[in-house]
Image (cartoon, rainbow, N blue to C red; front, top):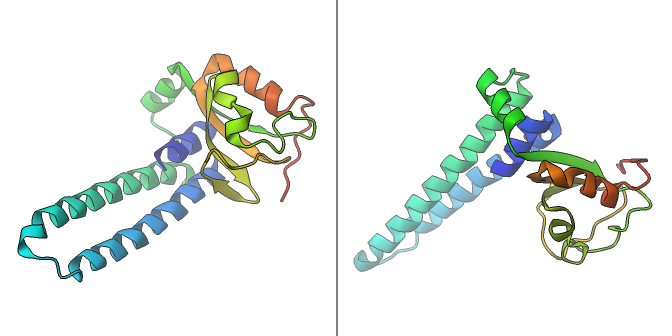
Length: 175
């Protein structure tokens, strides 16, 4: 969520920001279910400290999700980022980019593990946008024609990833 929120700021993407908000709402639901489960579990007194640790972990996770949503809200409200944030983004050695997978890409039908994108480009895939959804990258997910890869890494890898994903530079988004 933090990576997607940061990406939404860097790319000024309301689509990514909306996905962060959707994930934050899901986290709220999970946190409530978790607390109810903990409260109704009938644990023994000697188990209380273990449950307390789990509840604190849940609260910390909720705070992180809320922070990501606050970052996304900056984009969704059309608020101009603070000049210091803008400068930090511009001066950062790392960058966030998005690139469309075109018809002639060697990545098509490869899993993320098989594609070895990080090894080839130095870029880490943060999310895959497909059919108006943002997918969390997992090694077994296959890359499809029309996917948009959101990646972060050092700026030197940007061109390498563009060449892998969009060798013909004709990006077509599949809806």
